Length: 160
Image 1: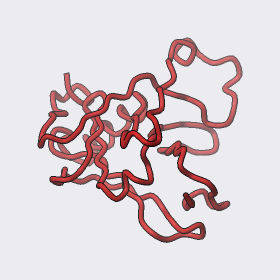
Image 2: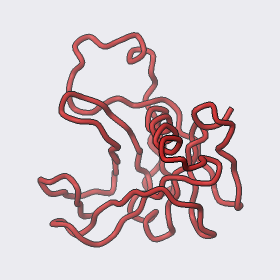
Image 3: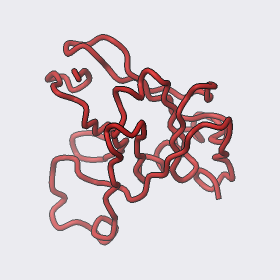
Image 4: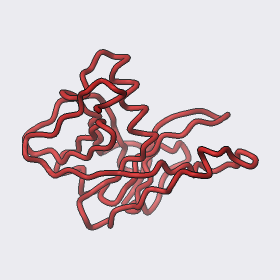
């Protein structure tokens, strides 16, 4: 079964594939005892920061599928482009957008959702985990990046 039960999420173009498993739910606060779903969830194993790989949690994959379907982007054609660009108070910022795979992309897939990373950006995000968290203070995608040496107070820029 493909992304969100849509039957999509194909492989292709000869790029490397990586599977994320588990769902990782550490986002800085307690949910007071937790639920059965949280208790049974397994943490995603972060790839080595030198591996040229990233992991995508189950929850992030499910949310990506949900967002792509809502925006009428076929998950078998599109993926989330995760990139790094110069800017921000610490020197670099992440960007995310739905896009189609390019010839030299690395593609990481979980539950039919694909994350596309260009060769330059993988140097900065290798070993990272893409998570999605929901909480009282907000919801969103988070990148747990072992290469970050410092980040600014705004939370959107970093330095390696």
